[in-house]
Image (tube, rainbow, N blue to C red; front, side):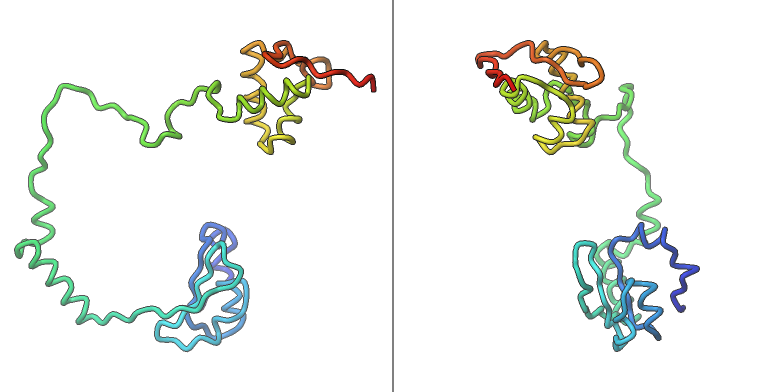
Length: 192
């Protein structure tokens, strides 16, 4: 089937960052798939262009041709490994589930899914040191100096306020006064 702009829409292309193009008839068809020419010069029989999302240009690859006979041989080999049983019969057998009165409970599968305490941000100590050296604190200052996003910087500033290190925002500037300098002395005012 010929690739068409009506079928391969921008939404579809946006959801597939990597693309593969086999031999096509025209330059236009190649542009529909890869957003650039090249697939019209392919030879067919598994010759393809693969465009990785992080690659500047597509790579030319050779796909493998597997005949129906080879696939049948593979299926027969797998069947022999199962002891000749049909895969459907093996799947239809009884399921061994131990009976238990303990209710099932969903647990966090990954560490980042577990609840995170905002006081444990790895950049918190660095942010505290920075605001103590500067003698002032603001979300935008943390964003610029630490190269982090607004949400994370705001969360760190809120944590510092909860710990009594900085005060509430002053007026419309959102600048905060440092209340606790810790072991360091407050910075000297240049009088500027």
